[in-house]
Image (cartoon, rainbow, N blue to C red; front, side, top):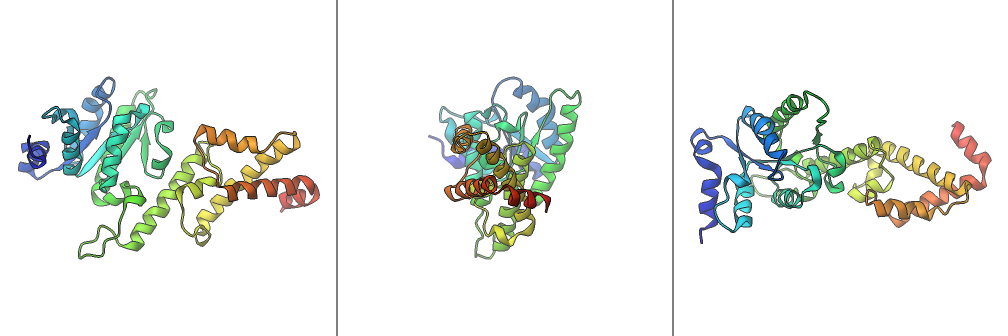
Length: 284
């Protein structure tokens, strides 16, 4: 059986070694239309950013496909993933990359295909109804690849970023916390724009010391207020407010902690029982 180091050697290829270029591994389903996207959009963008483009099916060397993929993930400088259709193999390989702190530039044809845990990372959504979607996406990717080469840790989930204490840290602790906070805010903004956000978004992402960040707290409060008003409507119409939480949970888009949910219901009931106070609050 060939050693992993031997496979890694073949993954990078002669072109990358001779020209000292960075390697970008493409992750996507191996079928149409993705094969066409790879050739017409993704490879040109990767090469314009100064890298060598490889896809896993370029380097399969044996029946031990997982070993080949693992070697390629470890060897790549950047990974590129098309998350469209929520392909299980794509998600698995993205997870491998993130686990070893490899940056992944992601695209999708529907933001709903992006797992909740990854929505804090920048993901480019392409609209195939636009005649120029390929050119538009290519331009965005070239810029994103160059930025990721300069700041790779911003394309890694904060949970996997470790501030090392040795002489060459990946990032220092302050930088790691800033990345974590920015990813949490991005996740909330995505869900707010998509009409999916509720107060549990912050809890779901484990935002630390939220009360110490005025901008984030303001966004959190605005979303919380929308949730309270939604529950009030159901209370006034005689519906069980707990059905709201159950429906949201079944959709799998939101997470509401017990404390957050109890607070929402308590405030909503208080406003229903004291309409004068509610109207005064609304006027304020």
